Length: 244
Image 1 (cartoon, rainbow, N blue to C red):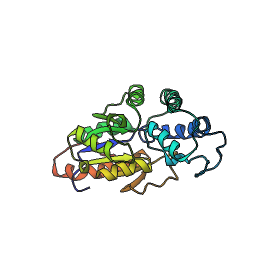
Image 2: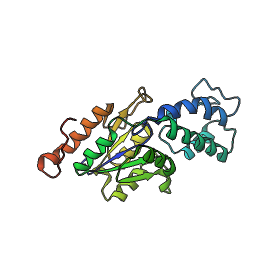
Image 3: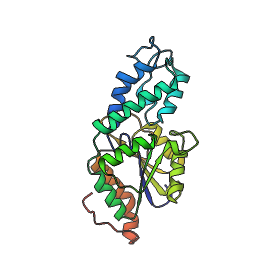
Image 4: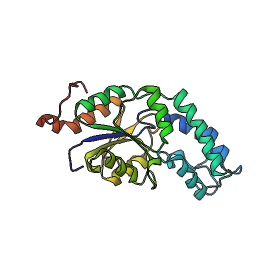
């Protein structure tokens, strides 16, 4: 990143909330068995009629997941049925299952005090993002969903380029927090600085496009403060938080 950070953009699934744990569980036990051909091996990974690894599609828009599966595996249902399965699963996950990242509200408050714009940039539809925001009372400046753009979602960069434009900054003035290979690639291709975030669901997943990888909210908070500190030292921004 060549400029000072003016915006911090968070992926939702696997970062703000621990939904990827549940998505992976339901994709393996409910979604993939329902949508793939009966002859598909549900205990294996790879091509040629076998089940895909969930990491292949993590971070992608769920409608594009269908297109990916249809192109690479033996899909047994129409897209409308696939969408319905995902919609019903999403409501259960976001209203009954997920928990919020420890200290996320306080982190956003600290970033606001430091003069940074905060945003959620997600492959999930706005309706799903709204479920999370309303349930946990999240105060962020901007929300961008992949459904807002008429271009391919993650791992393509368009959603992050669009988010920067909505905020009124350049992509290289943004710090992005992502937990998936597809998400980190999207942010890096847009020109943003990328923090890879590790949690339970992605402990073994590679995040090669991230500039740095952190584990847990405390380390993330410290890394974000470090990236904002040059401005703080020059007096351009101020924050009351000193315990990161």
